[in-house]
Length: 113
Image (tube, rainbow, N blue to C red; front, side):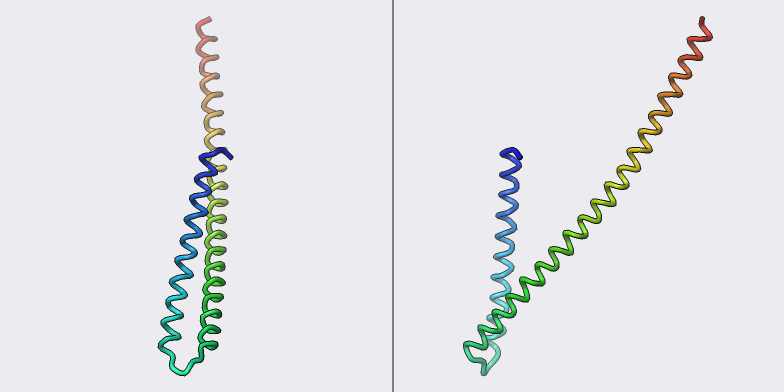
C-alpha cells in the first residue's frame, strides 16, 4: 500500500470514527431528554436506562453496518460474475472475428496467387 492509499484509508477511518461519535452523541442526547421527562426516576435508574439505550444503539448500528456490508459484498459478487460473462463473450467474439479476418485474408491472398 502506497502513501496515498494509506492517507485515503486514514481519512476514511477518521470519517467513520467521527460519524460513530456523532451517532452516539445524538443517542445520548435523545435518551437524556427522555429520562429528563420521566418523573420519579432515581439518578441510578436514569443511568441504567441511558446505558441500556446506548448499548442498544451500538448493537443496532453494528447490525445495520453488517447488513450493508453483506449487501455490498453480494452486489459486488454478482457484478463480478456478470462482468466475467461479458468479458468471456467479448473475448470469444473477438477470437471469432480474428479467425474470420485471417480466413478472409488467406482466401484473398490465395486467389491472387
